[in-house]
Image (cartoon, rainbow, N blue to C red; front, side, top):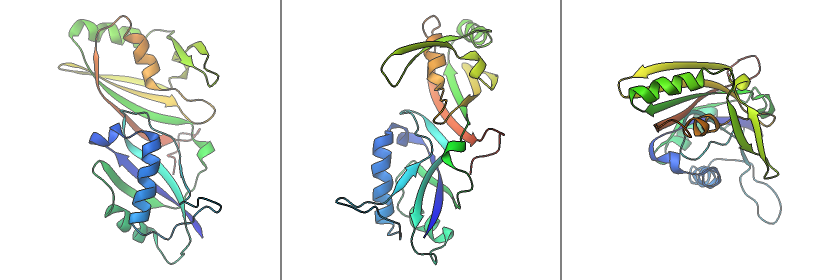
Length: 215
């Protein structure tokens, strides 16, 4: 028995699939692909799968991670890849099947890209907002309490690209079990005083604390 890591993209209409439904989808795909996966024991046995970092509803991604176990050592990673590719629904694309080299707890940072539609005045004001030394946001804790904090020190990288009808913003934010910053915390705060529409939120590559690609 060995562990395998599925790297996949979530695009198009698949962005409307919630994390809970994504879990059900992967279980069905694995079953349909007839993969020799390890099943849990007990009253309700099912294929054991785990996701490295749940994706927010409405986001697309280019580097999502799903881990599971193969019980047939003669079933190669290429065999797994080909079997899954035949069964994936529209919007879910298999990128690669690899041997996991890092543990999920090593996840530290995630890339994000947002495409924003706004007029010239809003574009200027939004850039000024993002360049502020302090950005105070509100976040709901696990205990259902509102926590107020300055998110600016948590933004590891920030860049802009001005578009004809708006702005493209790229950020590198903390992620994982110990610290996780959703970019919408920042832009929900900005939207209180600035008029704009977010056309796209894409999560890109994932990294460890040393900025090594998570794999």
